Structure formats: C-alpha cells, structure tokens
Amino acid sequence: MDTVTCTSQTGRCSAQHPGVGSPYFPLFPGWHASCIAALMTGCLYVEPAWSPEVNLPPELLAPAPDRDHILDLNQFSQVLVTVREPDLDQVVFLWRVPDAAQAEVVDLPQDENIWASLLRVTSKSPSLDGQMISCTVVDEASPANRIEIDWTIMLEAP
Image (spheres, rainbow, N blue to C red):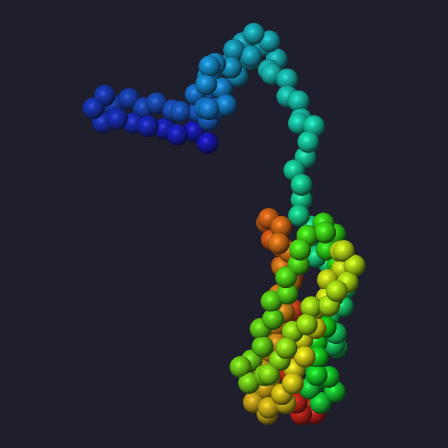
C-alpha cells in the first residue's frame, strides 16, 4: 500500500512505495523500475524452494461419554478425552469444572502422538445438575490450535 504525504507549506504531495528504500534493497532502491525498463517484459519471479511449516490441529479421537455431550453422573463419574497430535507437539488439557464439583484430573500415558486426559468427578451435589464441564485441548506449537469440548451435567432422569 502506498503512503501519500502532503505538506501544507509547499502544497506538494509525494507517494512512498513499499520496497523503495526498504531494508531489503538499501543499495539499489529502484531495482524494480530498472528491471522493467531494461527487460521491457518485467522481472523474473522465482518461487522460494522452502515452504513454511503449518501447525496442524490435534484430532479428537474420543470424548467419552460422547452421547449428546451430556454427563449423567448417575451412570458415569468420569470423562475421558483422547487426541492425536499429527505434528508430535506437546498437548495440554485445560479442564473447567463447577465449584461444587470435586474432581481430579489424571493425564494418561499414550503413544508419542496420542494424548489422553481423564477427569473423575467425585461429588454428586444436586447443585451440579445443568452445570457445564469443559475441556480445552491446546497444542503448544505456535500458533496454538485449540479444541473445545463441553458436557452438561445431568443428575436426574429427564
């Protein structure tokens, strides 16, 4: 994008073009103009031989229980999340549980690209009915990818 500067004293405007006088070409700032004038067809562009690495997101293998993302504490007292990380990045599980829920988290050892985390809910307080349990899976490469999984806690039969 060009930057246009106007001065009120002279009434003149000047445009500054990107690449002209840039730190990439400090010795020859008008290289593109001379290339076009000398060759009359433009400058040859050669694509770089490298390509930037892409950070692939973790692949969700198993949220359990996965039935409608409802955690029925009358039947289940734990939640398991398993992901596969194709880039072999470190993976972190961030659990959010209601204050009334007494819970513990256990990270389970898996293969080098499979990660698992288990949340055990040890309380069945009536105040938990309708509350949410969430798990965010984050890989630690830059830029970080995230997977969000939510469960609604159910204590009474619908």
